[in-house]
Image 1: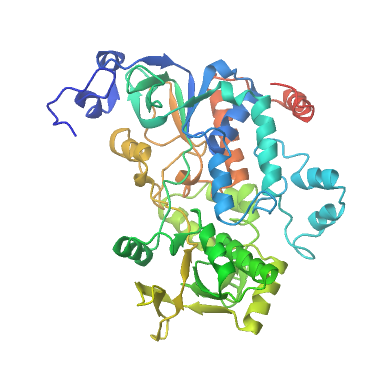
Image 2: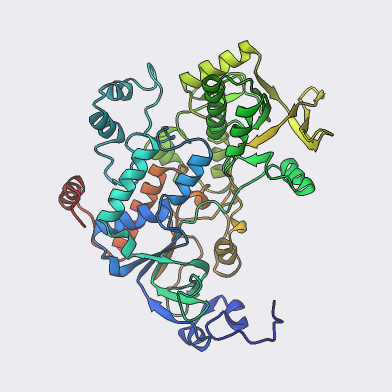
Length: 511
């Protein structure tokens, strides 16, 4: 790294720019960084960006007025990678409501209607009408979601708006609006950086990265072993391939949807290939039955798991919880999140039967405890030192450990959010994420007549709980679009125009 006194090369960030929270046009020009004027910029290029620009295209914003800055080629790329790693390939079903359609802001026809029509299977509709009393919640196949996203992306000319690059930071512009600093791919621009000068910026970058439990991270660092201790969200097919060659033991950590999917893969392989795999499942919190603060707020549970059909109770998307959350501030909001949050998974009859058979057959062992550390045995296997609530320490030995505890949630791990917190007036909400208004404008970042918005996981803890879901991204996109209409950037959406746009969607007519 060059000393601070060394001038930055032309077309790069200068010490003056890095140290100044609000930039002038002249400061950027003096650094030799090319500027491009685009009224609306979305950063991320994943599901959050796509849903937002899809709404704005339907509302009437032309592609020439928007740019999506991303280092991925299509909006579902990262999501499909994560679902595939966590054992949800295109043919399997994800955890999403039938009408939560990121490709269709109206939610009709639902995924269930579409799949029933395509598969000529009316049983899907029976399941939908009888959920969750007689049947499991109906959810779409991952492939159905991705195919429809591709159709909609083509319809709105998504790739006309895509700019490949890595966003370095967003800074306020003197006089209003924002500068978004982008590092383009090598050779794509004559300078190291380019800048988009915009009135509106939207940030939807997802999770900063993978999160490993401390003892597992310590093991990986100590032994440089990234093959036997793995995160469920990273490629780990070697685990399943090894188990096909000889009997082995796997430790699973975590009690959410990903843990249930990994379990199902292990059970399926055991039956399909006649394997002798042993499974040890460690729950930090072992749920033995229904739990909650009172009779009107309880979640089903048992055998270690907390059961819930979707990430949050359905009323957060349009019922009493949504109305209540919009009124709460500070500690009261944080307390409400704690009450209805927590790791949970949908109840699925199929893998419930698999677990029951595993317990009876002596090859699935669920235990409660906190792992103090993981060590390597003399023969190269893994021993976990598990301390249970009664103080007893168990030492299960395994060939692999699969960490299913989730993704990194600290927003400061992402450089764009870290810079916003330090230089642009943004601050954390009661649960530590980015504080946003009810219309998803980032609090403290206003710049003249411009606005900076955020949606997705970084905004968890705000006035709307279900942000990191398809329907949550859609609600955020609608709030943002309506706010942009109030600011005069786009026409308001009325019932007649909305109906006309729906027919365009049905017939796949370009926007």
